[in-house]
Image 1 (spheres, helix red, strand yellow):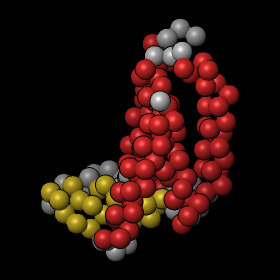
Image 2 (cartoon, rainbow, N blue to C red; image 1 turned 90 degrees about the vertical axis):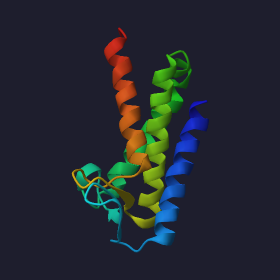
Image 3 (cartoon, rainbow, N blue to C red; image 1 turned 60 degrees about the vertical axis):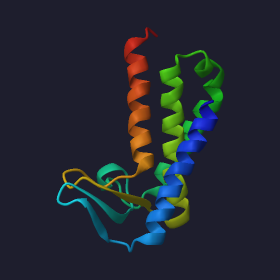
Image 4 (cartoon, rainbow, N blue to C red; image 1 turned 90 degrees about the horizontal axis):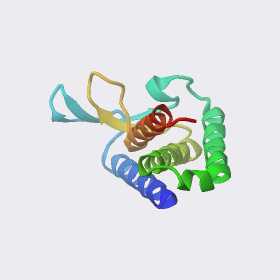
Length: 143
C-alpha cells in the first residue's frame, strides 16, 4: 500500500509538472483568482522558500536516506496506524517527485502561487502533509 500511494503521488506530481511545462512559458502567470491564486511557472533551484539553492546533491542524498530508512524499517512501519503509513507514503512520493526534477533539470518545477506564500507544487504538498502525519504519530504514540 505504501509503495502504491507513493508511486501515485509521484505520478500526479510529475503529470502536473509535465502539463505546466507543455502549456506555459517559464515565468508565465495565469490568474485563476486575480491577486489571490495564480498558476506561475518557475524553476526553484533550492529547497522550500528557495533555501540552499543549487545544492541538489544534498537533497538527493536525503531522498536516498529516506528510501533506505523505509526499507530498513518497513516491517515496523506495517504495524503502525494507517495515518502513519499514509504519512510515509506522502513523504516518499513527494520526495521522489522533486528528486526526479532535480536529476532531470537541476531544479524543481513549481506553479501553485497564492501570492502570499512561496510558489510550490504537488510534491511539496505531499511532503508537508506526510511530515505532519509522521509528527502526529510520534506526538501521540509513546516510544
